[in-house]
Length: 98
Image (cartoon, rainbow, N blue to C red):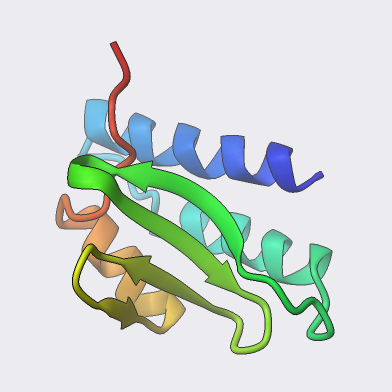
């Protein structure tokens, strides 16, 4: 189930990349809420969501219910709304694989 949610998140972000005029803020929020329902707070390990450009890894922290941006030198912990806003501004998009 987590794999389905991970795939759905990447698909919504890629759709926004192709059609930025679509109102997809709520779609991304819906996928993140599905993830929150799927995992419980007793889950101890962070859940890998996807890899962004420049080896930036995006995780979900079940304990906090928040996304974590893992950069090479430091980490950024965002609230869901700020994470979605940053995605829609073109940050933290999934890396394109050739």
